[in-house]
Length: 240
Image 1 (spheres, rainbow, N blue to C red):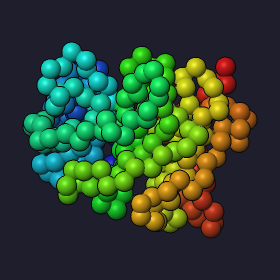
Image 2 (spheres, helix red, strand yellow):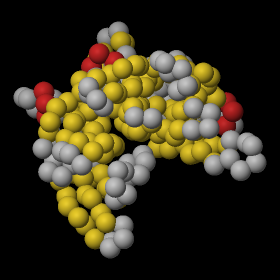
Image 3 (spheres, rainbow, N blue to C red):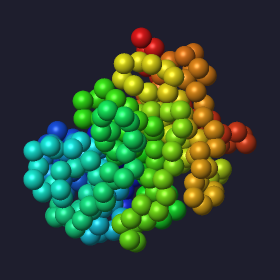
């Protein structure tokens, strides 16, 4: 899969989730520049944000229960050198997983965007078996300290992933699909106000606005305004 946004330097990055690797491609010469491993096997990388020549964030979606080193277990953000793949650290997100009685929900960091110097990461909030869902959430990462500076609960939504930033309005749109079983109740688009600190959930466009169909979590895209309006497009799934 591809990252959520173009990367520093203009190169193309391909994320190999199954083999936990990143492939860097020169779009001008259509040639592979390098391929690096993401630290930790079976951690299922979902997104990457290249912050500098020697620093990148990778969202590691899965937790490898067999890993004995927490640095390699996943369910976090790995801080790596994008030239070598060497791990420089990790950002633990366990504290931001939703509390659900009777089970342990994983944060499951999914998509990531660099917005005004901060990295915003969507958390799917699903347990190890993909049967129990917590409340959708965003975390804001300060890349100068590699720490979470804010967390935004996406109340009434679950399984939140794809994002787009509307710069003119300083809002973030987040696609939330709800449970994979097809329930529409916790599905919709979250509209998050990034013009205030900390960010807040401004409103929710529920799945009912899309003929009752749950949203796909892969993406939501803004239509660049040309006539004073702002529109966005998302994909829907079957309700059943």
